Amino acid sequence: MNKKETIVAGIRASGQPHIGNYLGAMKQFVELQESNRCFFFIADLHSLTTPFDPKSQRANALDIALDYLALGLDPDKSILFLQSQVAEHAELAWIFNCITPLGELERMTQFKDKSQNTKTESINAGLLNYPVLMAADILLYKPSGVPVGEDQLQHLELARVIARKFNSHFGDTFPLPKAVSNKETLRIKSLSDPEKKMSKTGDEALLIVDSPEEIRRKLKKAVTASAADGSAPGVENLLLLLGQFGSAEDVNKFHAAIKDGSIRYSELKDLLAERVIEYFKPFREQRAKLAANPASVLEILAEGARKAKVVASETLREVKEKVGLL
Ligand code: ATP
Ligand code: MG
Image 1: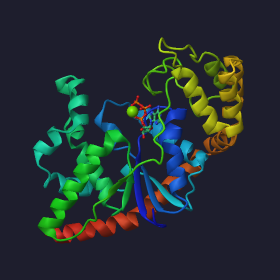
Image 2: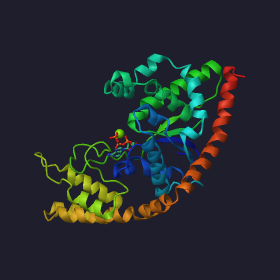
Image 3: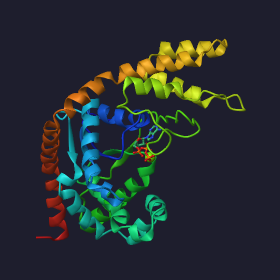
Image 4: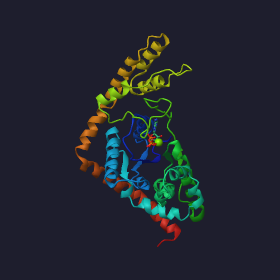
């Protein structure tokens, strides 16, 4: 990737991030800011599409801002803001709604999945129009790349469809954004069921905010049993984590012990626990500091919104002119 590409990424504020979220997504975001112009928004309008409680809505948005800032997202290097504080997102989404064929939205896998699992009376139009808002979120900043997980690729493709359609009807306006995928898409497995991925909604996950005691407790219980075919996905998962949070030396030592049969899983778990505790220590300290001063976090978000608005309002002005709004 060239230096100073424009990157836009949405952050879902849904529940406490676990180490899978960190290694699979959050860590890359923080790295991207070093050589790119990054717009990171907390997708608080998107979270209104599924049932929510206003109190936790507010708390979740602040929590995730705290997490990212404490992980090293630097307001001097990247722009962090709340989607709802830059009104251009919703305004562009409306204009895009009016050029998006209904059929395109109805065939989106996420809409089909979510609407099938929800009672008909609680499926709202926002759930259907979610990808249109996402197209607006992205295209407002005319990025070259969007880091998205596999589950969002279809929505990114729709954003490209909308961009193409807009360009062909109203003249060249939006460059087509590419998906930026993680160098090595790490998939961290559940500690108690290593056949499944670690997940917010699944079995107890190892959270990035966990205290040293919690980290030790959760890792002690991690499954290491071998499967019938001799494979041990739980052990592989722990070694993968040790490689991420510890050193190559740490990992080699255990690989050697597996080979010569002297492996003791309790030692692997203990060392991993200490490495994870150490790794997230600065994060925990920084997070506690920021949490003690929520006003400073709100100010960072407000300042981020002001900066994002400069770019977003320019794009919206161009769009309105092209579609004939006075
Ligand atoms: P849910 O169970 O509600 O889907 P989740 O744990 O999958 O929650 P998401 O909010 O869906 O978390 O995902 C946030 C980001 O973290 C996405 O980019 C996703 O690809 C990544 N991610 C989620 N789980 C893992 C995992 N186990 N290993 C690596 N990356 C992950
Ligand atoms: Mg998920």
